[in-house]
Length: 518
Ligand code: KIV
Ligand code: ZN
Image 1 (cartoon, rainbow, N blue to C red):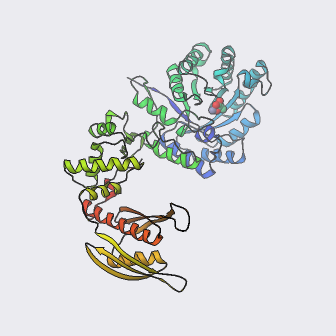
Image 2 (cartoon, rainbow, N blue to C red):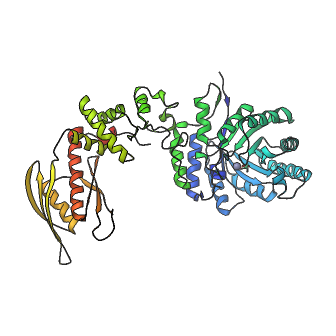
Image 3 (spheres, protein in one colour):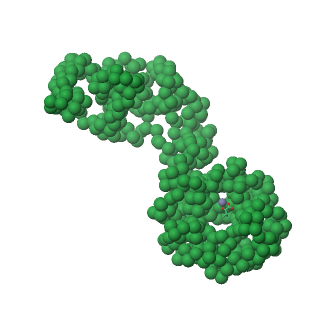
């Protein structure tokens, strides 16, 4: 089947940036524009040049640096806006002016124009834009709440005045899919000259229907979808680029349309837009959310391990995600636990697996996520392995007089040994004494103390994270004495590193075998 081409018009840098708080810096806008161009976006709406000096400079520079994409700027239906817009986009290899006016009764009331006066303004401004630029897009803002006859009338005027793209915005996210398709279909059937222009759809997500409405409009005959990365935009946002593109890709059987988008670049650009706009992507957002390719429940994990298609309709790799994630939590089943153990290089028999599984469920009930370290600790517990290192006694001399001094007794492989070490404070002296008895190259990545109760006799919880040859191990301990808690946490992390090394073998790269992070 030959597929119709749908052009993707991205307005992350204009409509997306309009969301309260999503302002991006000049350099960030240039970076996002380059990523959009590289991923195959056909038209980039780079900003609203009359809105500010900064917007003007960003649009001009994006235009200058553009490669394959058409660079578009937004302008109200006013001649100075259109002139300013042209000044900004004209250096692009392919410039476009996008001019608009609100045509619904509510919006006509704001400039206080009659229907005739507005019609005249549209004719005048579109003609003016067309005299400057060959590529003009016109939008009747709030089209979905504009009277049908008036909408047909103004669309016809804009086409006659030279607009080559007519965008039909659902500015307030009011429409529903069937209406969205019908509106475009009827406009194409009714308005003289409609066959010679491209109809675009621009949907907002106030009722959560933006993506469905955009795709329905395409069914009705639209061939340009306006959208933003992550659906960034005013109020509930705009149609999300990643959603419409992947919907057409995955359901090509019922939506036989294609785009130029390189879908493997989706995740990267999603993360960058989230970072620069400061808008976190919700975990369960389609395609780009942290959980979009993650499965925790036992039934799902079991299915995924047998055949990924059981619970995934697209491959994570297709959108630039390293792989499916099967985080272990209280809903996970035995199959996922066995897979995780295998990944960690731990071979267990059925009985031991049963035992580990019971302990794992108990732990998962208390903890949100169960990490690799926790699993290895459960394995040690079920094999009755003794910790290689065990704190026996610790004495500290510290104060204002000089360096601290630690006297440590520690069992190493079952034999008590002792050492003394000076240090820059009591914790440093303690860790040094541990290293005298158990020399190691582990790097301290994190040392964190938090009080779990109140008062000077509060319990302190100390967390220590160590890294050695790419392996990471964490130890945690609580005690009313912070130095004792530190010693225990450090020793626990070292014990876990020892276990890991035994399970995975020398030189093995644990990062490669751990579950890929989204
Ligand atoms: O939502 C809208 O109507 C717009 C127009 C400026 C096209 O963003
Ligand atoms: Zn909009």
